[in-house]
Figure (cartoon, rainbow, N blue to C red):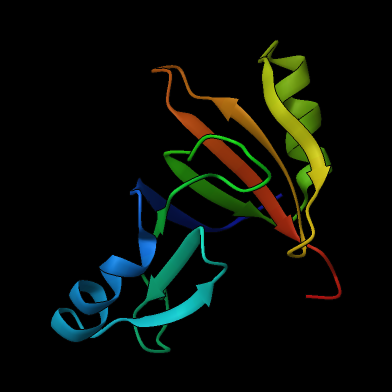
Length: 120
């Protein structure tokens, strides 16, 4: 199992309002926009830094503090179970092409663990 990327998620009532700040000021590109979440990323480079601004976490969930993309979600889910961690949401196959679940880290931060489906 390998972590592919980690994205900070910032809660905001109107994610679209962040576009001028992150695009115009910082030169990031809007690489995903579902209305309730907009993800901004540096132009294509190795390690492409990203940040998401969201009014919700999708499917009516809370905005997670971090999203961690992994290459084997089922393995991480099994590890979470063995560690006795409470699954806060999921696992769920979402309509935007990810399978994911929420868990809390030792400090209470809500973490979205996800993998993209093969079709995405």
